[in-house]
Structures are given as structure tokens and as C-alpha cells.
Image 1 (tube, one colour):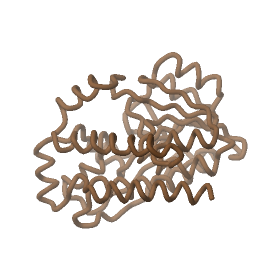
Image 2: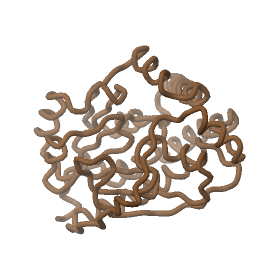
Image 3: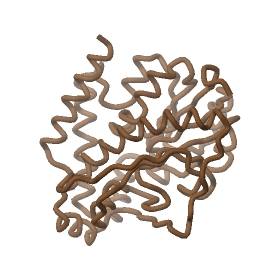
Image 4: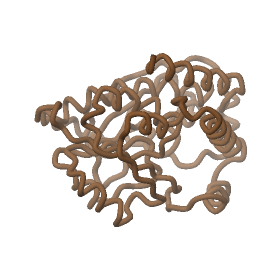
Length: 280
């Protein structure tokens, strides 16, 4: 299929990391992006205090504090500087892209909205919920997902955290076809990344997001060419869920941190500067 005619729809939570991954796609394929769905609920569609409470019951407190603090800090910065490209929605607004907000990605209204857009490709980036088969069958060509590990290892949640807790020295990103099995579809593109000593989970995710943006553009070309991808060896699969206290102490013992305040400040400065440079 000719990429110039491809109709692309995106499913995402719209956070800072999804902005890093998706910004090059949105700029390169602006005329091809037919819609962006912002999924605002947690994995069960809960929002607000209820989502925070349920997540807090399953997640080590230091990681929960990091997630909440980073979200609040970046949200305040985005509101204070609405034309800065800190989160993804600022980019979609400036580019004039159609948007839909929902707490549940599998809601009937989401399917109806996407169906009317008639997409060739459905791209999932940091979508917080499992996408059901009905939605995956909607695009005419394929549904693709960007995952921040070298699948089949470190499937599941927060792979950028778990590789540090498990003492890995190499990680990477995978763009794969989406199937009904979670993170199990054929692999189109993988890129590897050396893990620096003492790096934080936040900084590692930043690096993986930048690498993921490159991999995604390559994978879109391959998908539109009809390349089937490489099946995963599921015998090598590992899966991780919410960060635990024991994993947090392992991460610290390995010389890493979840995040550093200085890194968050620099990230915000870079995001604002980059958006101004792009717009001239």
C-alpha cells in the first residue's frame, strides 16, 4: 500500500513519553493521521482517586509517588505553558488533528468513532488498557504497538523499571503487530540500547521513547508493504506487572534510581525548547 494514502489512527494515554514517541510520526504523516484517541482511564477504565487508590494497593510506594509526582508536575507545566509540546495533546491541537477522549478504549463510542475514520493502520502507544479483538480487526492493514523492551522478554508493565531491577545491561524497543495475546504479536522492528550505569528509570524511558519513535516509522513502512514480521519465541517470554517493594530495593542495590528531580526539570526545559524550535 502507498504510504502517502495510508489512513492512520492512534490510541494513547497522551503522556510525556507518548509525545516523544509519536511526535515524529505526527509531523511526518500529519495529513495521514485521521484521529487520535486519548485513553484516560487505568487498565479497568477507572479515573481520578479510584484509579489512584487501586494502583496504590498493588504498587510499591516509591514508584507510585514518582508516577503521581511526574504526572502532576508535567500537567501543571503544560497548563502553565499551553503552547509548549510537553504532552501529546498540545501537539495534536496545534496540528489540528481530530481527537477523542475516553476512559475506556473498548467503549462502543470509540469503536464507532474509529470505524467512521476508516483507518488502514491503528497505532497503540502507551495505551493503558488491553485492546479487544473487535477493535484490532478494524484497521484494513494492521494494528501496531510500541513496547519498551526486547520482546518476548519483559512483556507487561513498566519494562524500563524492571530491567533495572533485574540487573540487565541491555534493553531496547519492539514494534509488533497486535494480537489478542498481550504483547505477543509478530515483531516488525527491534532496536537495542545499552543501559548506562546508575541511570534512572525515568531517563531510561526517555531514551527508549526516542528509540521507539525511530522504530515506529520503520515499522509503519514495513506494515504497509505487507511484511508479516517475525513470530515471537514465547518460550522465552517473561512478564512483569506492577513494581513491588522487593524489586525497588533490587533497583537501588543495582545503583539505579526511579527518577531524579534534576532530570524532570531538564526534561521540561527541553520539551518547551524543542516545540519552539519546531514551530520556528
